[in-house]
Image (cartoon, rainbow, N blue to C red; front, side, top):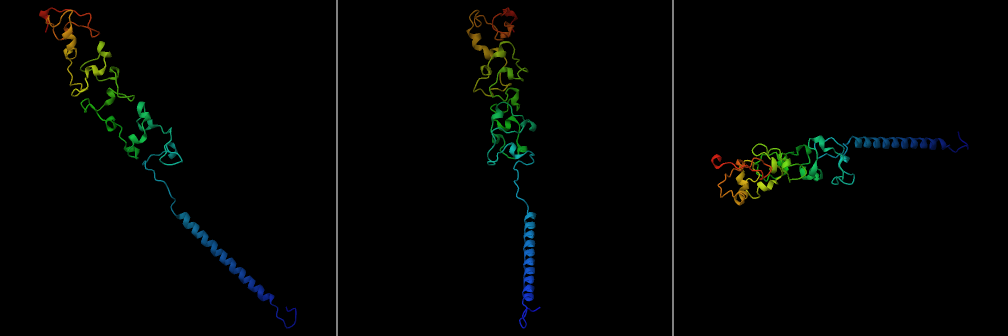
Length: 232
């Protein structure tokens, strides 16, 4: 329809142009949207970054031992129950730094025998079972801690309260080798025998086997004098 005779109506032309331009913009928008979706899909298909545990198959939350500040920061009070490993942390073991025992971060590889961590001052002459004499509270022991002293020389009477080092002299070869010390009375009590005056053991030719006269292990008093002809 022409409003003025002789002048073409341009609205239809421009209207068509606007419509085509609108379609092109719509197509471009769809293409951009599809491209964005494709990029997002490729990004989601990419493997997510993950932290590989250096502890092997240990299946506990990291926060049990670590803090959120840094991997190297270990919590002051670890919530992990170490008894579940078969090696409960008792005595001084409870205060030892983790890395002192766990040199290998794969904890399943950590040895659990005494000699694996502690030097054996007895040079294996007493066997490898440290807990026969020692406990986790420290290396110092009393005769009450010793389980294996009953075979060759039972600790009864006065011997039960004697300090270990009174018999096991420091510096001797195989100091705590149970088979390296004599069980003869005189080997430890030579000084008491030689200095005895009432009666004089040396002058009277008494036997060096103290048990010939001293029937009790509780002390020197109460001895029974045995006639010389009965000494062995």
